[in-house]
Image 1 (cartoon, rainbow, N blue to C red):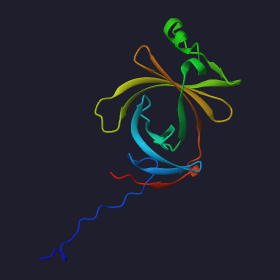
Image 2: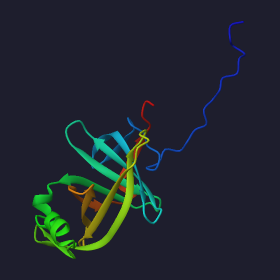
Image 3: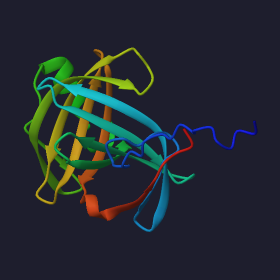
Image 4: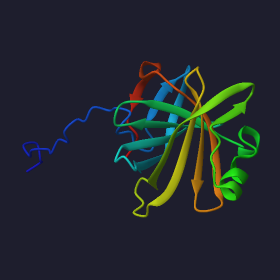
Length: 173
């Protein structure tokens, strides 16, 4: 008749967490609202998986990486020439990785070298990368990634407390 008595299929509710955000989802952080503009997946050599989100407020952006153990790392791209000017030459010419980096009068110590695979969510193709993590004593880090033989990227970041992020709202997907 009019469809009053037809049963509607109800999608089960899924608790929204930092592990399952989608493009368009929003969070509140640092007194601003941020929107997920991209989602990335990583599988590291130790079989640890992580998700990374690119958040924007319309003017600036940052990355938030969340691993299976709940560690949350926030980073922003930084010029490799600024944060580690000799790094690329050391890798390519000397085949060594520096133990320490000095940036803004802070010493960062190599904590981890990891090989992994990466893809943007929805893409079937994976890319390989090598990542070096340098930490200082304030839970701040420099991450340097190598993509292919000659392409390098730098990021500056910090470990953040999950309680500093709230008001997770789903996207329109």
